Image 1 (tube, rainbow, N blue to C red):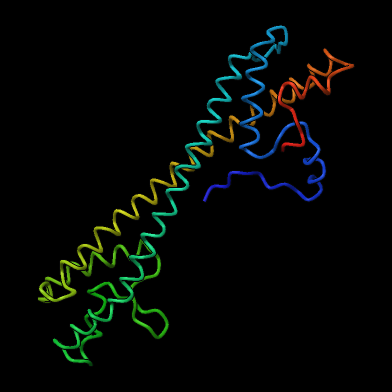
Image 2 (image 1 turned 180 degrees about the vertical axis):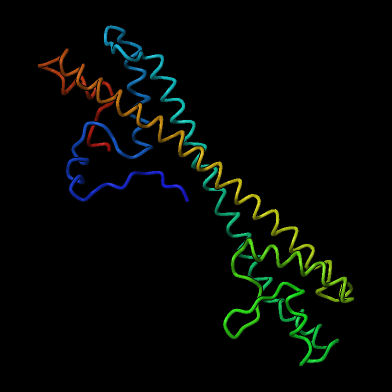
Length: 229
């Protein structure tokens, strides 16, 4: 998983709690949007290396990436749950496959056929692999072996295991896609966050220099209200 936030050392906790700029993403989004609106109304406040319009675009990118990341990340939970449910079903019904083999080839000979159905040895147990990519490969073997050994019409035969394979395949692909999208969104968000932080810090210094006697109230007007974050 990709981390959204940079870990805060214990020695910086007090410093962060009294900072003029917010550390949390949602607070940074809210403050930045307020600053953008105020800056556009005060064209006399300038920085040599960026403009209010450019800053507005960076803030929009940050907000969009943050919102999409939260939405996409939230969807990951349902994908994880689907795979968890499928794992439970697979584990529960694995013994039926062993039973079919024991009925056809007798108890002593059945274990020789287990690998063809995707089973692997784990300690003293013969199970489907726990790793999901390996389990997916085992399910493909299961579907193939059911037909080869004439078990396709069993209650838990070809139709049952083909459905599990189809759902497992979709779940794995979606989880990989979701994780990739989250990583991309986090990267874009973090890059925009750095630019926002640099601009906010610069604006604070400019405002302090332009309003030496009233800068505290001016900063509040621009959205820098420390008690809210």
